[in-house]
Image 1 (cartoon, rainbow, N blue to C red):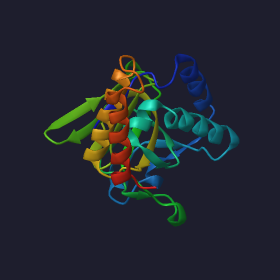
Image 2: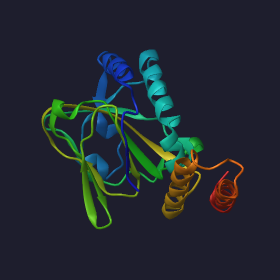
Image 3: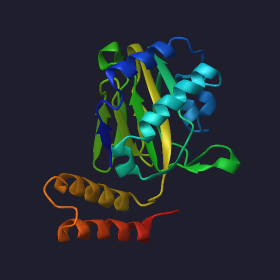
Length: 225
């Protein structure tokens, strides 16, 4: 399941984020890539170890963590420490699969879902599409700044080579309480159905109560604590 969430960041928040990234220092991105991905990763990552960087990361993560679509589609259990990446002309990140496990041993997280929150407008760089290989199709995405793309960490994907300009993105991974992809999709469909019917059905109607019961019992079957 691939989902684009438009305007996860407001214009005001996005402007503040971009202003704050201007003061960050950058390191080569290969340092955080796996052995295979390291060979095709040609970007930079922000140093977020200082007070300014840590606060920026926490503010962006909070915006992702609290968004209702993330909650309904991902059923997050834990989040990795996200990154801010910068790709310039001549850079990119060739086809790879994200590491299945991330973080130090005591805090290791299984990566079920990946997300990219775009911080640059598509007109500010040439190339640089997020290209995701899904069964029977290839999706090339270059959404507006402030939009987020959520996709399976199991998918082959790449950041296409940049031909010009600069691409900034906030990138992270989620361990879901619902391990199965098909199960997450069913729960997401159910959440959307409940939302669409909420204005037409009384909360105590037989239909509303049945939908609530179905969701609760599916979670009992599938959810990890």
